[in-house]
Image (cartoon, rainbow, N blue to C red; front, side):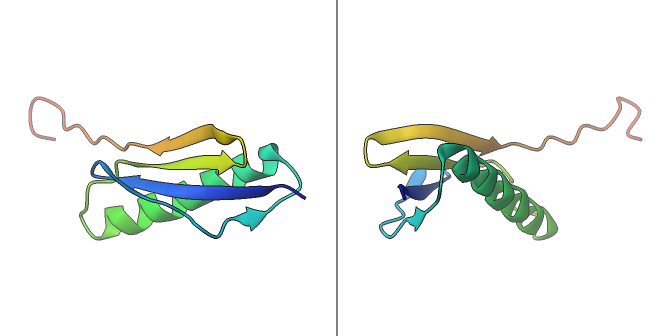
Amino acid sequence: MPRFYFDMVEDGVTTHDNDGVEMPSAKLARRAATAIVTVIAYDRATKNLAPDFAVVIRDASGIIDTVTSAIKVEQPPNGG
């Protein structure tokens, strides 16, 4: 079974996943990365931290995908 690595990129700093996780396919690795991004975005939002970050998915051959989170809240011109 292939091994996938999920590197976190936050504020321009990459934290490499040196252990990785065995998964049956890249499709499932993308789903896992999407779940990771969703949970972290929620956690960061509840702490008033900027929610912008990414998870880079790698396998033995290199980067295969990037899942990014960016949440933007805009108030109407009258201040809502």
